[in-house]
Length: 397
Image 1 (tube, one colour):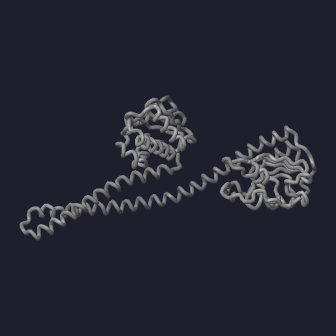
Image 2 (image 1 turned 30 degrees about the vertical axis):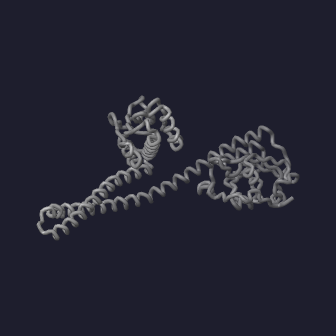
């Protein structure tokens, strides 16, 4: 039987499955508690949280390893039993490795590995590695022991998922810090553009008398020259007007984008959040007469980040406007009204003339693809509208 087996040969690199926090070689108390309990429950001298990488299996937490393996915190992947668990996405039971031709014999020969029980560790549908126990003598594992290890593997998976989220959050904070500099630079550039536009418009107004003079001059040649200059001046005026209007739309869109990436939990005025969302979806909502806010403003301390709310509302407005493109019986503007449901919830109702119940369902189905996992937000159809229910924090608002 071969000493080494590469059970994952030909598969893509596994690098993208792991975050820095998951691959940190410092002691994680939660994972250590899991391997300690795994050893107790099964009576095995060795227990591991093993992460299967491209060339090695990395021991994220361990108990009972021989000194050399404990110091290395790893072995070559093609020596591992855990790679077989990853390959099959299923538990592996080995009662006696010397009689088990499917497992590599390297660690059997060098470290006396004989019995093995391993369960997959899954994060976001991907198997990162195993929770396993190892014995140096042949043995069986009872049903109760297998059940215990299965339960503990879920705890280890949850911990690895949390470590991954922390790393992503840290990366996002870094990206946000960098993006703030970019936003500041864009704002400065906008100020320069607005200043230049203001000066150009000022000079355009002063040059405008040429157009009036061209209509009165008696000299034909001079009149033709002035009329040509006047036509060019009028065209410049049109360009300046269009550019000024574009810059005016750009500023709220920039500020809205900045709110989307904001991490802080802040008190949000719903009309402000809606205007920010409309600025992001304006390229579609403007084709249907825009968005109209109806009813009084509602102040609310929301149980979600401002960026989450703005992104959700922008997504819904985009889906709503897109539906109006495809539903000739429905047309804008998109009307939004807010009302309190109770002390802890606010409802936003999105309507358009001619919107059907089936149309509302279609909008919700398309928006829910991106928003269904957001806590504190529930999007649902009604017979003639789409309703967004927002949960307030501590019932305040």
